[in-house]
Amino acid sequence: MLGELIGEFTGRNMTYRVLADGKTETSGQGTGKLLGMDVFVMYTAVVGMENGVFSGEENCIITTKDGDMVNMKINIVSWPSGRGGITRGASIHKTQSQKLAQLNKTVGLHEYDTDENGEWEGKMWEWK
View 1: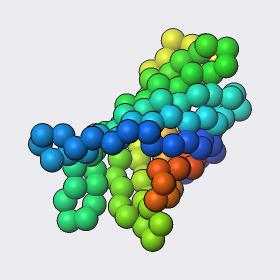
View 2 (view 1 turned 45 degrees about the vertical axis):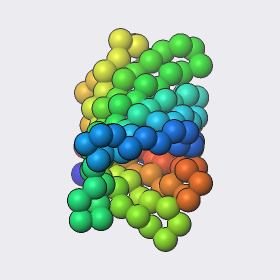
View 3 (view 1 turned 45 degrees about the horizontal axis):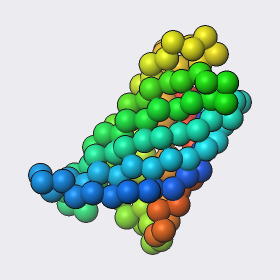
């Protein structure tokens, strides 16, 4: 069941690489709010395409302005839209931060919309 909204982010894909195995790697950054705190987001996703659908894994580090950090691993599926792409995913988290500790027991559900310029916006909900 979809729980409360716990994160909202915006950002930009900065680099793209085609890997030797035919998969693609995308890295970027963004900002937003997580659990009500201002955050900076850095990520790299590696995906393969089959039948017009991308699937793969994203690794992400989120840092608060106070220096608290959480590592996030997201399994994603993505497909083209009329102006870019839609990505959905589910994440698990690891943190030593007391402020972010509830994320250690949270599965996040994500939805991101990316335009043709690599600009994206996304939301993250707690899966209950």
